[in-house]
Amino acid sequence: MLELGSLQRDALCEIFNISVGQAAATMSQIINEEIMLSVPEIAFYSVAEAGVYLDQTSPRICGVRQSFEGNFHGNALLIFPEARSLDLVRLMMGNNLPIEQLTELEQDALSEIGNIILNSCLGSLADIFDQSFNCGLPSLHIGSGTSVLKECDADHVVMILKIQFSLAARELHGYVVFIMNANSLDLLNEAINRFLGEIPNQG
Image (tube, rainbow, N blue to C red):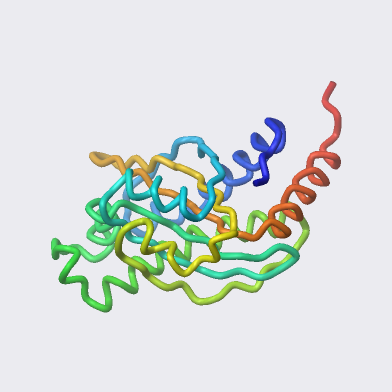
């Protein structure tokens, strides 16, 4: 399994910190409430390990999945614990229906939140690495962490970025997840190294 060096890991965290920050600014305008973010924490897992990890964070989660294709390819997901995932939707929609009574419109709202954040992350990767990605349509999955990841190939690697979203009176832990095969992860690592090599030496 790919393990990034500390420099590559810090660079990737900073890239996602910027991209998710841009997405949060867009979301803040939509819900008319400021969203503050923690610096992402990054970790790598097998698909089975990632399912267990997500199961430990919440019995059920909401995940918005979006495929992407380019020089490296895979699936990107935005994941929230089920009990908290409706906070943003309720701010957008102004209602208090339980998760079991999600209307199609509310499911679309959840998918749109995922679309905004995932496209921002992929857009930042494309800009920084000078690449382009073709993205599929977002799809919503609700269930255990293991069930949400069950369609992924068992030999793929899962990169999880843990992010804390803080609103006025709420705190919400979310996860941006990238699932790629070993070849795509190697290409991502090469792209990070090229990016680091192009940064002027400040010393």
